[in-house]
Length: 170
Image (cartoon, rainbow, N blue to C red):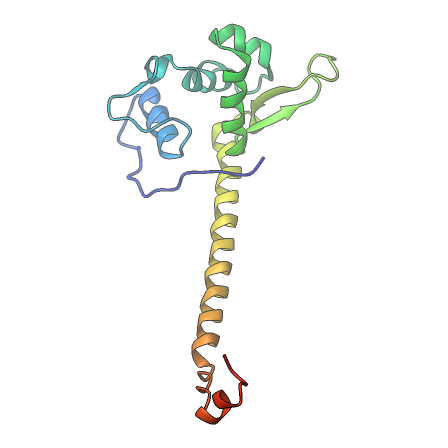
């Protein structure tokens, strides 16, 4: 799954003291929750939506626990497709890790917050963002080199009237 992060300049959320408010705003900043001035999603307040509740009530409440999709579905009262949609968003941020075996149950995937810590999980997202920005920089530098080379080449000479008359040019 490709890494995907919304990157925009924002004031740190350090003045806020309510963890739910900080979480909600942070998740909007990184693109996990939709933007909305009214603090609502389609079905109501963000705090009641599956995306927010998956993170707040499951993964952050018990960060070291590995959750099966069926457990998350039951807890959230959400469909399998909804749960997977939000799991995939968190995976694209590289905040989740898949656990192949939990309690001896082989073949079933479970998901948990990477390293059992939101701060340590964010280290991965930050490293991916730095790598992406470095690759953008490489592309920009390459583009600039190509443009500089293009400008330094002499312009092709216009064909002479005699060459046109002989049919050597179009």
